[in-house]
Length: 410
Image (cartoon, rainbow, N blue to C red; front, side):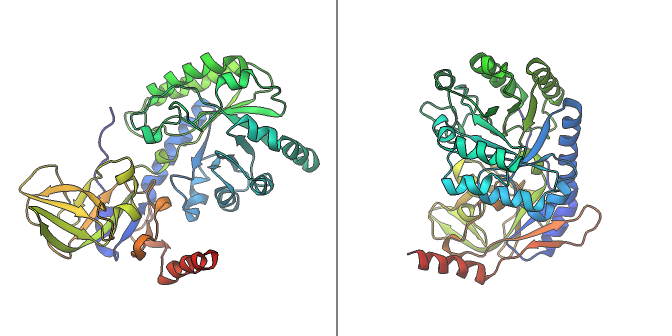
């Protein structure tokens, strides 16, 4: 069982008082601490650890992360370009998507070091194009298959790629009936979400039971263990992970890859908002903020989960029960734009700042312009300075440009 996130640092609370809201604030020091832990695991185990950009995609910070990580993984052309153009030149870019178009393959081949396919039909369709590119360019690019171990360990069905009928990954039965796996040199599975080492160990056991015959083939030179590993959590069994990676490398003569996203950025950022109105209805005290669950932190609704909410003044954490309870809500027209119920020792006030903890991952990458709500500015709190740096600021023109494209396409 993993503990709750640590409270935001005094430096983050101080920064939350300085910015205009809504705003994300990333703590560079916390980010580097996570990256340092991952680098240590990589060095001890021999694994190659890359950033999963689906969780965090701030290119201004890629040069920093590039000092600690082996590269980045991508889910398509844009993420592959983002990594290739902003990580150090020697970094690896690993691409894997549920499906590719012909245009995708043409763009991804020059960008990717690994190009992994979700199905045998996709590989069969593009195999000749891939092998011909490799031959003509004389470029080292490896091709792999995403596998489905058919072994579920998660608790949230929305995040279970091993559920019956899943579109994600190729089962062992399909691989055993494959006509040819010529050109395939790696296997890739991604089945975890915010989980510990024990779940990975049990999944690897299932992978070896179902796919061990293929892992032992000389043509298979790498195994990607995917993401969802909470490696930088204090309670994570990092020694167990190191031993597992060492064994896999030795038993099968493989390179082993890990692609955590949340572990890179966990406990490194907050989202700051301001109370715009206090509105009682049917016995519920609604506190309407200048941010939104659906537009700015959609996992609150999708997982769902209840993020920690602190009053910036006094650094008081909202509890589940207490003297003064409020439903913190967003400012969109969606009736369900609700973050959760929180209790505080004294009444909230209009104009007060609220900060939501642990908001660096799966938030900025998922934000939308729904309802035309103001987009949070993204700030960096440098490790060696209290002077905030603006990483990205959004304007009406960003919103207008999206609407213009929509109008043209319509």
